[in-house]
Image (cartoon, rainbow, N blue to C red):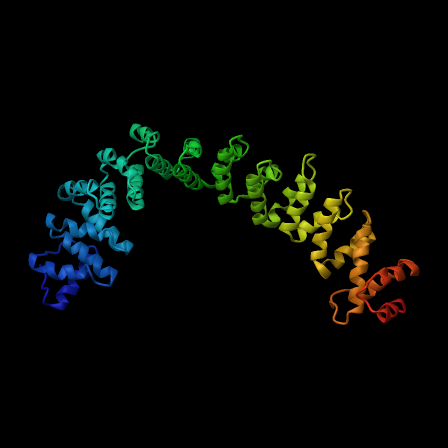
Length: 412
């Protein structure tokens, strides 16, 4: 018993219980002050109130302590769970009663405490809670079952084929909590469930396994069933692992439009990491080369331009158009690259690169505020490599230049 009228006595009692001391006598006259502590803005003082109230060892206060399990502060909530679980002879029947009462928050709180007690006999009562419309109840029941039993428990196995889709979905969530890779094929079966909630639960469950789940996920991408392909792709998309790129490239031209577009969007999200795999797809004899070139264009970046430059004079007009459009969009930034391609760089010379370079060169040399990084002397020499007649003919085609500007250029 401590003197609730004496502030020093009260603070000593609070300090004692927060330090771990439990040999503090609490009398009925102290309860009014303890109830004030339970509403204190300071989480540590609320936690002290929970401990002090539990020391009364009176079933009449079980409801108050159970409500404190719902406290917004994890330290207070955890303390309430501990003090209730530490007195099973006083609290067990009380907690069991809340499993069947229509009070979702308190039901979830009761399940948390019973789980902490290790009440394995609770499993028969918990599995029906998998059908609760309240997320917090299903989550608490799922966590408790994962702690109190193993994945091979016949009750859990039977629930996996329950007619209620919420029960089936929560079973998959529960299986993922065991963190056992051997359960991955079992969870993947949920991808074929007719109920979207079960499919979604299976997807979230598989995400918990990370890259470990990729081999069977990749296999499902090749399945003939479009629903299985899509369900698997959503998880692969969520994981966004580099290990998926060699597989994803096989679906860049997939006949399923939804699947094809989804794969392309994901490749763009990968960015330059995906470029070598997209470029590799160009060599596939069945590839839509123009569409693949467009994907490289959409990904963008220097590495994509490395591959697109080889397509500037491609035999296919559609492919050439995409590659040239990508280069044109880069403006003056690609002048060094065009310079190298125009010269051949010891490999091959691109006529289009030379024409584009000449076009950029004329504009750069004649516009006073041209890019200062451009080697103007080098461009001037390049433009005089062709015959005077060819240069004059080219300049005459430039409608944007005045006649005097064309003459000035020819005299440079």
